[in-house]
Image (tube, rainbow over all chains, first blue to last red; front, side, top):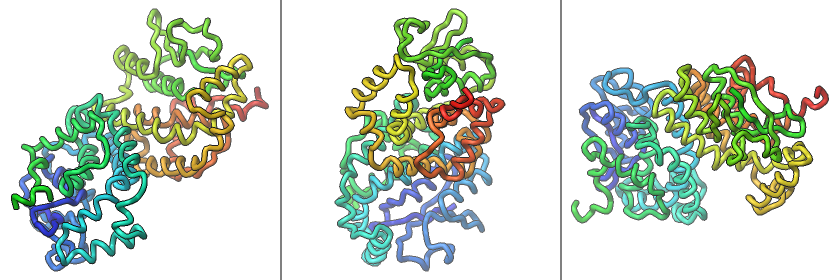
Length: 231
Length: 231
């Protein structure tokens, strides 16, 4: 199996939170896979010419795009451990996904876009900038100065800390889809920058460390922009 | 079993969201119980003189206060159907609880306090007003004019609609603790006022109707302040 994974100028640096979600799903199922780095501009290398956005999974003759479709495909096609065990856990994962989109991405994203822009391949810079600036109606530099981001991030992490004070994972005793959905934006940040601009509650920080340790430290070993000297 | 339940001047009107949570837990377990109306000022009638806040459950010699303690007690003491089936569902319920406290209560509460104040017993008015005004540092009338409440409520309901587009309940196929936690503030509102000041997404409205139908329409039959002519 091959997962097409967004790459920056350094093709070993893989920031996309949606690709991280797909990678965690593959790891959770215990499946062997390799990642194939793709830059935004490399449309000709996309396995499905109709769908130019990663993540894309190639499994033999099957080509599946979009992290939610990939997860549904893996659950249906492979026994292994369930990524979500009950309809209630699926409903909770849908809520976390919605909450992340309304709270975590808007708090973390504006600061990250400038950094990602600086680290994408030369051929990707114009596309990355213009697509984001069109979506938000501001320059990347203006976006990074959005007021109240620290307060927004800290309010979100405070809400998130409640389940993590009492449980090892959002999935309870072990990680499930909810953990991967909520942790993926933090991988986007970790890969992109070593600095955070907000305080992380203790219970959330401890959970992040557990997430980095999963699957033989797969996420912890991921190359970051801060590792450049070792490149 | 007897549940001590907060009452307004009309002792059949029971607005407390925390008491609603305890009532839903009793109903979910299929247990027989009666409610005992208590007003704020009736401290001498509280079964536990050390703990003057409802809900309080009396089960034979056991007196349990606080909705979370009551739920834990019911799960431990009575077989019946589990209110939360898995550690993952408990963790999700903890997240919903934290989200409700940070998003739903602050959006719905400020408008409701004035209405509840108008409907509490004469002996409770001074306590109700001064306790809320001390907590928020504003008069009830100022609180009710808090700007942005409509937008805050609608943003919260938008996040909540995502799981409810795909599932009948937050618990998946059937209601669990998460449903009761999130629905209880809406019962507080329903009992107190027939007006809402925000738009409810279709999926959330349909779920609210399903919640009202549960347990032979227990919540739907609850007396509201709008029913006064029938009192």
